[in-house]
Image (cartoon, rainbow over all chains, first blue to last red; front, side, top):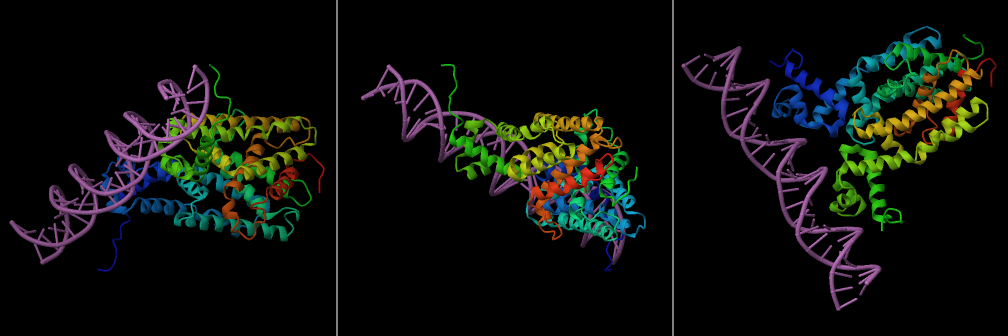
Length: 210
Length: 210
DNA sequence: CTTGCGGCTGACCGCTCGGTCAGCGCTCGG
DNA sequence: CCGAGCGCTGACCGAGCGGTCAGCCGCAAG
């Protein structure tokens, strides 16, 4: 029997992974001990080492599984045939909604992305982030070549600004809830609409949309 | 003799603070041990406890001293009498330049800001961040009332997007260096100019600037 | 019934952690 | 010449860390 077990990872393993993700997202790699995870998952500490070997390995599993949930974010954008302002709005909405839907997965990836440790884990996050950046960059560049976006706009700066605007809002959402002026702290649809309004009217060739 | 020592903190203390800031910025509170700081500062571990009492206290000193360097960022903006696009450009430039000039101070504050631990340290970062947000928000709101900014623009969203665009670029600058399409990874002037170009043309009332 | 095996555990390991403490050496006022 | 005070240290503490290991338990095949 060469075939591996057809069933997905054991229930226990999934519970451990879920709790580890939750804890790593909240407190980071160094802020969480295996004992913490074991207690949260209601298993023994040794059990975690039995299934994952080392703390690093457990963390890597959490990171990769979280990265996978980020995968298809920009996939559909390239196939769309809508005008650029609509496609960018869709991207902003998809990104913001994704962050809200999978906050722990997002947080664990972003945390690793923002750390400057030049280890293996970093590369994973960089690859995924780099791929997403490049896809969005090319989309903007093509739209610019097609005349949909003004020539003065720097595509890379626009992409960084767009992603940054969405990510930052996610990162400081707990603060924004306390600001009475902010009405989009937990409303990705509203925020991405407001964002798109600003960005699109900033990259239009000639005419005004309003 | 009730007066405290008139001299600024001892040389040793300043060295410890500098090294601690560097390490906390790079690896976070949990990622740095007092031994690490002691080795980096070339003093004994006990010396650090002698001067700062606890690890938390050392961290707080690092955080507050870093926050102070953030202080005057938005101060001059309110007094300026330039058109809004110029003032926003100045803000973006000042912010981006500040992040580049004091990367460790910025990182230590941002790190604390993005953590979701509801402790005392958090409050410090929140207060400073909240104040800066509100100041910029009011600036935008006034400009909008004065007709300098289109009524459709949401001031809060614009502020979050602007700060986020600058902060995010800073956070991922090490990644952006590897992206050949990005020419502003370590050039705050260039990046803020490109940002302003996009944002300003997105918030203009009627006429075009180009 | 027996045997093998995988999921799982409690007890334990060496080590590092944050923190303590007695006491060193140097300086400086009396 | 003295002693008080300060900057500073090495040795040490209990606790918790990542990780190991012998072995328990239930189950399925022989």
